Length: 112
Image 1 (cartoon, rainbow, N blue to C red):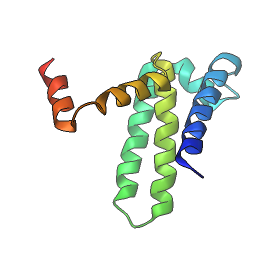
Image 2 (cartoon, rainbow, N blue to C red; image 1 turned 90 degrees about the vertical axis):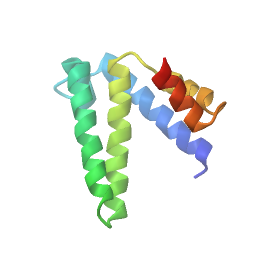
Image 3 (cartoon, rainbow, N blue to C red; image 1 turned 90 degrees about the horizontal axis):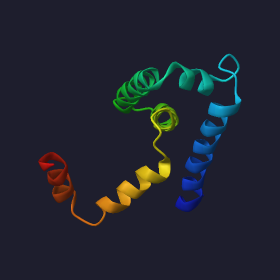
Image 4 (cartoon, rainbow, N blue to C red; image 1 turned 180 degrees about the vertical axis):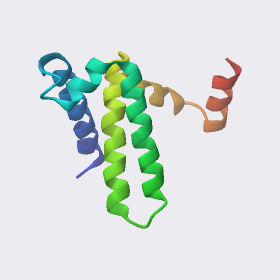
């Protein structure tokens, strides 16, 4: 699968998260339940998943790391939804950062 198709997969997952946020019952949809619990709960869950990814990456099981990375991406999209930030906004930010070196971009964030 080409990179463009994989980005479509991420956008499709974002659309699923959005649809569950507005149409699903929190008792029937894990996503709806997380979103109903608020941004703080979504942030905590994202953090838990990030730690699980860190731990998985220390091992030699690529499948475990892959599964945890997928969980992180899902929970990132849920957290973004909970805070009103779209994947497009994140991608625009990344595009802006390509216009300068990583060191210059980091310095601009810490100076401002």
